Image (cartoon, rainbow, N blue to C red; front, top):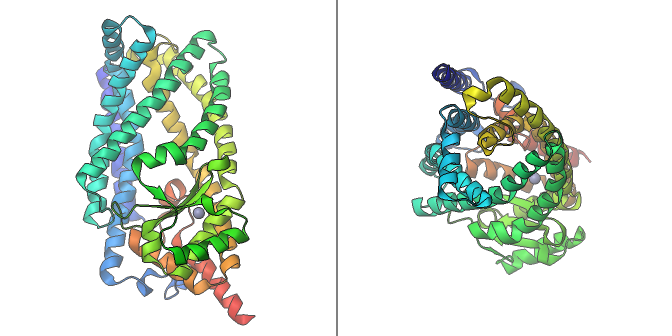
Length: 423
Ligand SMILES: [Zn+2]
């Protein structure tokens, strides 16, 4: 039975992978609809032949890796349970210490270590991919260092969450999901508050804007939106990547707008001001807080579903998966697997909300700067530097795109430009 279940799980994964290979490489049509050909959204008008070919190729590979990696996690956790590794981690932990908390810490280090090893090849492939296409400029050592920082941050977080979670499961078989959710609220807020000052600086250097002339222009714009100067930062990303980005992070007094130095180096001042105005919209419209509220709502539903699904799976397949009880730490891989599946299933919805906010930010930015030429060319440069797809296939858009496609973004700006001219 166990071997049969393992076989079918691997088979399902392979079929799923082949389906997406076929979908992305043979079926999906990412060519431009007729009415957009020759417009400023048409990549043929701003990319050269080589860039055009590379962006198609690279996007396909990246999309395939995206669709392969999440279900790979599910397969990993499933096999860990099925072949008794979770059980083994627990007995190794119990034989090395008699303290409950230390046992959990040892169990977690084994599980994290195996998960790290299992997912390393896929992350390595995506690292070498972006290196081949000249997106990433990161050395292997620096990439590995970030993988290790990820590992330890992840482990540290688990070390806080997991003992509390299993303690709650023991205290209340029927309500643990609700108590876990209630406790997750201050934890989430605290992590969001610390993120930009404690976690992000572990990866990169953050500092006030270096180019003082540009800084004056950016801060004038920020002032218009009543954002204090000390909330605008530059981050040193050029040693890792050629792509451009800017974002808003943190809450309360740690809320900030961050501009990648690549963005500042590669774009003209007017283009940067458009990007900055876009980020200002996220900041003033408090999209982070909306995001947190939605996240908390999703996680309440998600934890309840996890509770129901876990109880059902263990009642039905507990023997095969070697999980005697929900509150036994051996069920942790099942917990992760269900959470990851629910996150994946809800991603079309969260992406939809994000795309709506991004659209608002683009509108806000163009109304603020009123320079469609700079806005359009900044998006064209964004497309070129990230070799991104202007018109992604439908499933890619639904599951991956937290931003509208460049086709939609540039077309919107072009319409604005036409309207402005006719005024
Ligand atoms: Zn945005």
